[in-house]
Image (cartoon, rainbow, N blue to C red; front, top):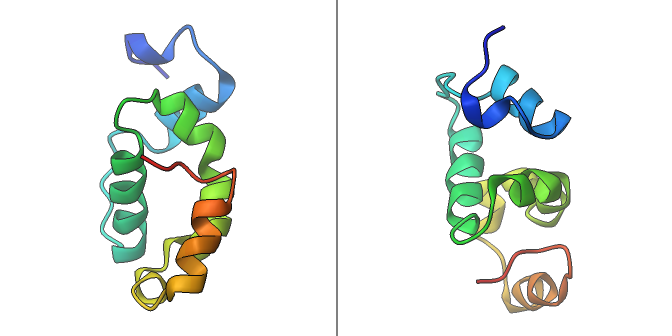
Length: 89
């Protein structure tokens, strides 16, 4: 597979992202919400940081289930803010 310049001299994780996800259409709502959330969290950070934290973020945010997230109460929000694995801008 020919890789984009940004994915040639980088980590295996970034190369896997390029090879398996980058540029592929996404139609499933929950996956779209995950990508939107990750892109929002990426502001000012490298995409490598986001990929490194992806599994931690999935666990913290109930696999990016937007129906569950919409029902988060104050206790859950405070727990997220206290979670060192969560990105807080």
